[in-house]
Amino acid sequence: MVTFKGGFMKKIIYYICIVTVLIFFALVMNSGSYFKKSMSDDFNALNRDLNSADWDKAENSFKELSDSWKDLVPRIQFSVEKDEINAINVNISRMDAYIQLRDKNEAMAELSEAVEHWNNVNK
Image 1 (spheres, helix red, strand yellow):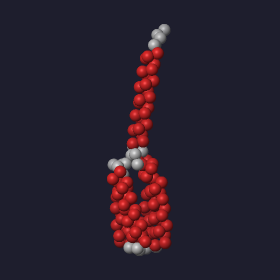
Image 2 (cartoon, one colour; image 1 turned 120 degrees about the vertical axis):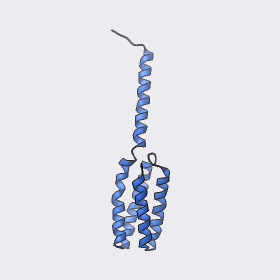
Image 3 (tube, one colour; image 1 turned 90 degrees about the horizontal axis):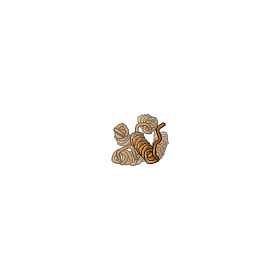
């Protein structure tokens, strides 16, 4: 029967802990695409409401989009580039102003740009 000294087991446990932590961080850093699926419906609803120029529905859809974005940012902030998050924040702010002004063309342009940034998240 082979017996191992305590030092060998400590090394094994040490390496298992290190590998577990590395795997955890790799999963966190690549989780952006998993969480990003939750906003596509909000973008589509706002696009539909802007196309029909139904401003009351567009305001409600924008509020839902904005709330979803605020909830989503903390979950994806470690796995996506900060520039993409900032760009979407700017697009959402501009969209809010254009929806309040009832400017369909500019709101659609900002929505289109936000969707493009959204599609590039985690690439």
